[in-house]
Length: 61
Image 1 (cartoon, rainbow, N blue to C red):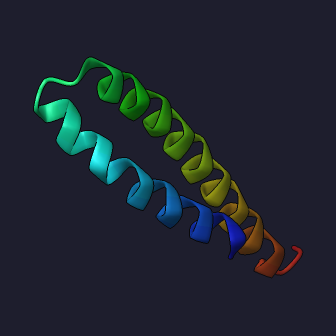
Image 2 (cartoon, rainbow, N blue to C red):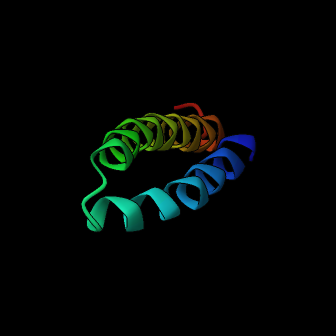
């Protein structure tokens, strides 16, 4: 799933900035917050896709 690959890439991308933000780097903290919002949005897309796949498999009543 393409969205899942994007999610993993975003998580990998944010790791270094999290370490920098923990050290007090304010610019890194801003980048972390932006990337976390992107992660949230991609995770929501994955959730929607999974629900669509589930609903497609349901037999019609």
